[in-house]
Image (cartoon, rainbow, N blue to C red):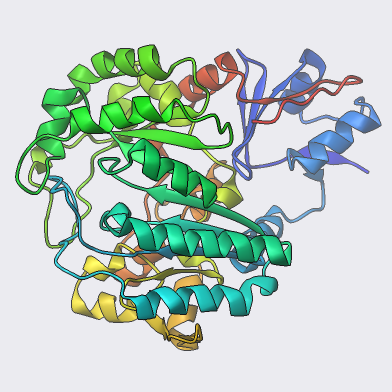
Amino acid sequence: MVYVKSKWIYLNKESKAVLSGLTWKLFHVDENVFNAFENNDFEFLDEDTLEALVNEYLIVSENENEDDLFNRILYEAIFKNELKVTIIPTELCNFRCVYCYENHNMGSMTETEENGIIRFFKRNIRKYERINVEWFGGEPLLERDKVIKIANSIKQLGRENGVSVIASMTTNGYLLDYETFSELLKANVLYYQITLDGIAAIHDKMRPLVNGKGTFEKIYNNLKELRKAKNNMFKIAIRVNLSKSTTPYLNELLDMLNKDFGDDSRFTIILETVKDWGGNNECKASDDLLDGIDKIKDNKSVLQSYIDINESVSGRICHSLMKNGFVINYNGSVLKCAKAQYENEEIRNENVIGSIDDRGVLKISKPKETKWITPDLRNPKDNCEDCWAKPTCFMCICPLAKIKQVDQKCIFDEIGSNIDDVIEVLIKNGNYSEIKSNNINRREM
């Protein structure tokens, strides 16, 4: 069989690296393999090496239609037998972040909705190979006891039925004291995202309490307390939202984080640019927004932290695009997108695809659901069709953008145009797999 290189790869000659736009995985290869890619001639490679390259979609048979291959992977991700549900126990919040799109004037879950959610999982848990629960808000820990009760129930149901349950939480961290954290760990809530928008003076301006007081000190002290946990399974991603005014203080924050958490692999850093996320509370500092990660690409620590959050392409797909992905709101309504409920009335109506009753019965409008899970495969730009990163972009499609009828964003608007910098840092930090001719040794990312 004659093989050719995939049209969805990027070659970095300096590092002898191959980056796949189909899987968003990076491979370091030896001289022989890299020359094969450069010359598009793989006949001299041994069978084991060819098999490894084929299995990673780096090479394909000369007659293979790669567009069909991508479509298959995309639709497998949309219709895979995995439940990915976000639960919003309350839309209330104890913070008033300046860039937040939520209005926080809604309510909290009652016992009726609480029992309905537990009964839903009891009714349906055996249907799925895996369940992923994300706790979101508002601030979910304002309903601490309900969260712990529901999470424990789902964990127990998973054990009884042999179904893997993974739970995560997006929280501002203010109420995440050690006791609460310990209870959540027992309930199998193992993954957390907590935001620090710079050093105390900066963070407290960006993310104050409702009464205007600062929040940095309490969050940071909570994080240091959480290090004491003996559980090695949890992960805490400390997110830093960057803007023009906060970026100059970034290194000072990174120094603090490296000092206090650098030796604990359970803690990682996510760096993201502040955006105007819309909603009724439009960003109050729109002239302070960065254009993209390129603006801070000279800071290798920033680049490294940002790259560390890159997942596999199938892992990056939004749950709103998944057949078995949805949001259960505090009032029992079922949504496809947590953010869309803060858009205009027409989009809010499109977003409510059903409801869950106190018996745990999920009632879904199929026509509404179909609008969300049908991917928008329009090319957002003229040069998308021939771009090696097209699959990654399209797997990261925002279903809400399609519903709003706005153009999709290019992935390079987010990570910057200098992909060689990205590869350099990934190689430096060992975030790659290795393929050698006659000697294949892999290190998973």
